[in-house]
Each structure stands twice: as structure tokens, then as C-alpha cells.
Amino acid sequence: MKIVKYRIFRLPGRKQAATQAEEPTKLTIAEKKIKKKALLIGIQRVREDENEVVSPVSPIGRKSPVNGRSKKSKWRARRKQSTRDALKGPHRDVRAMQDLLVNITVLIDDDHPFHKQPTRDNILQEIDNLIRDAQENDRFFFHFSGHSDQEDTDDIEEEDRKNEFIVTSDGKRIKDDELRSNLAMPLPAKSSLIAVFDSCHSGTLLDLKHFRCNRVYVPWLNKGYRRTNSLWNSNKRMHAKISSRGGPIARLNQQVVKWARTSIDGVLATPKDSVTFGVKATSVSSDHKHSLSIVTDNLPPPAPWLDSPTAESKQCMSPVAMYCTGHCRENDLLTYEDAVQADVISISSSKDSQISWEAANGTSMTQALVKILNNNAHPTFHDLLTLVSHDIHSFYVDLHSRAREYKKKVQAANRAKIKMGKKIKEGDLVEMNNFQNPQLSSDRPLDMSRHFYP
Image (tube, rainbow, N blue to C red; front, side, top):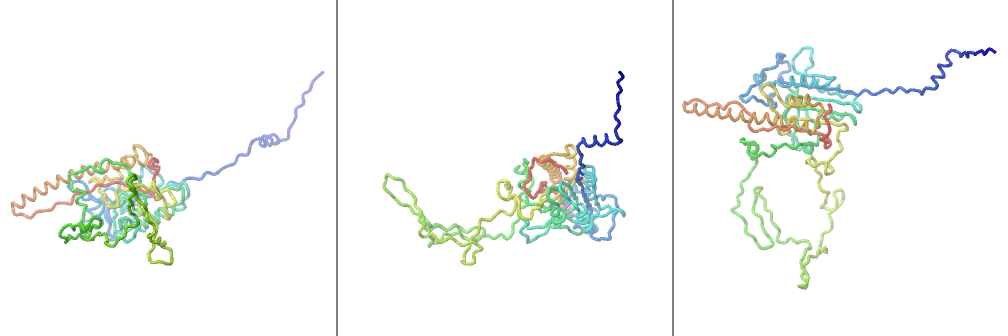
């Protein structure tokens, strides 16, 4: 008996269709591409005349006898001094930062005919381009190296009653309020911005409210006598008045004492007809201790609140601190109404009250920052601020030492000129008092254990 095996034929395509039906359907999910963009600005020299053109070669800059010069008032110099007083470091700062970042826009005042110069209009335009169409998880980086200054203001939002501003290459200003409204406020929640300001008075150039609570311990905050009168020279005698009192005023009786006149020319005195609110001592039998009883019959009625339409005297709640106290994590001063939505952090080379100096070769905070990031690309903010602070402090210790030696030489030369009947010279301006403290600012108390990710 022959067994015949029958081959079963399938229609073309049926097997493939069955196999596809058994496989689960795969959904294609489009992943959002996170944007990383950076804007780097370096201004070495400010032109008082918009049509003034200089050589694209970096200027020699002013070399003081102690190899240091200020980033503050060079832009105020007269035109004939502008080339001599130009900074040397900003262009090198920008080039150093370029090696650490991607997708970068650069503005430097090199006067190249095909390069956009860092004028006020160009900087604001590039800031708008930087954050345009920003979405959550996007990361932005802003760096400014150049000149900045202060001006007086009546704005109570400014703790020191001064507005800070950067100076553009065409001699115009961009104030801290404008930088905040154009660079930080438009960013959406869950996006981030790190801004680095290497210039004078740069502590609050973005008007970020928290900075004292972001400080780190450094051992030289109270190091005693520095062989320079840094603290004494910062004192200013303003509107002082010598008291005309003849001496201390004698006591009138055991309860009422008139205080001596103070330097503010005021007298603190307890009125004779004052009434002590209801505290009286009552004596009882000798077997019991003396006790105090509170008399409340004569207490005045409570004062109405400020929003009360009646009553002459009104009361309000205790004042709330308007500025960062350094203890913001322990109280309610964490956020405020107009806080930026994004995660915005500012790294400044100095406090608002300080001047930033660069070495004769142009080295400043940016170079110290780049050196640290080359060794460790993602340090914690605590370590980053500590290392930068130590680096800058070492520069100032050396700067002050060389400044003292220079002053001694000038004084010795002037004594010799006096003996010879010649006119003395004051010598160049040198830095002997200032210490530059980098500052880390944010709109909320910063977790200093976070890692730096530009």
C-alpha cells in the first residue's frame, strides 16, 4: 500500500498576513529634541563715538605696576585714553567658553566687517533669538564679560537702592530689570538658564532675589588684620553731628530715668505721667512667695486693622523681610509673586558693591571657572563656588602684596624728589582694599548639592 503525502498549498500572502496578525502592533513615538543654546558676549572696549573703529587686534590695555586693572570705569575714560584702558580678557573668555558648549552664538567687539558687534540692539536681538520658542527641558547658557556699573534709584526692590547695568560696545546700557524681563521671565517652567557675569557690580544683574542663602563658607571672611585698611577705608562719614550735651543727665528717681543724648541727637525718656500696664505686686503671708497678678481692667481696646474704614490709629501685621536674609530655607521667604517660572541661576564675579579686576594678561573669573570645569565638568554648585572663591582670593592676596610694595617705592621716590625740590607724583591707581567675592543667585533657595549642567 502506497502512502501518498499531500502537500497543502496556501494562497500567496496568507501566511505573511497571519504572521503579522500574531505580532503586536508597534507604535512609533516621536521623541522631543531638547534644545541646548548659548549666547556668549565679550566687550573689551566701549566706544563713545559710534563711528569710531579700532583695529581688530586685541588692545594692549593698561598695565598697572601691580598687574591688575578694574573692569568698572574704563568705559568712562576719555577717548584719548580708551585704547590704553581697554580690557584684555573678554575675547579670550568667550573663546574659552566656546570649547565647553555647543550651539553657540558669539558677539565680540572685534570690528570685523562680517561679525555682528555687541551693541545694545544686537544683544537684545540675540537674547530674543536665544530663548525664542523655549519649551520645558530646554537648557540655555548666557555669558557676559565686559563692563558694568551702577546708578542710584528710588526703587525699593533694590536693597542697596542702586540699579546695575551692563555697558554695550556702543556705550549704551542694558539695566538689570531689562535683562530679567528679556532673558529670564519669558522662559517656561521646567526649562533652565545659567547666566555667568564676569564684570563689576554683577551680583544681581538678573535681579534674582536669593544669594545670601546660597553662600559657602570660606576661611577669610573674618581673618582679622589684613595689613591693609580694607574695612576702615570703606567707612564713610556722612551727615554726622557732634552732640552739644554737657554730660550725662542724672537720674530723676528710681523708676524714671532720662537717657543721655545720643549721636542721633535724640532723647529717650520715660514720661512722668506714664502708666505701667497693669502689673502690680501683691504681698501675701510670709509662708508664700511673692507673686504677680495681671490687671486687665484698664487695658485700651485693640487698634483696628489698616483696612478698617474707621478709627484714627490702626495696626498691621509684623513686616515680612523683602530681601534675602541668608536663612530663607527656615522661613516663608522662599518664593514671591513675580518669581521666574524657569530654573534660573546666575554666577557673578563679584557682589553688587564690589569691583572686578583682571590680571595684566586678562585672567579673571571666567578663566578660573573654565579651569575648574575642565577638571570636572559637573561639580556641585557648592564645590564650584568654593573653588572659584579660593582661586580669586589667591589672586587678590598677591595683588595687594604687590600694591603695597609699589606704594612704598612711590613714597621713597617722592621723599627723594622733595629733598631735590622737585614736584612729587602720586603714582598709578593700584588696588589695595577690594576683595572680590563671587556670588551665586537664584529666585528660590538653591540646593547646593546639585550638579552643574549647562
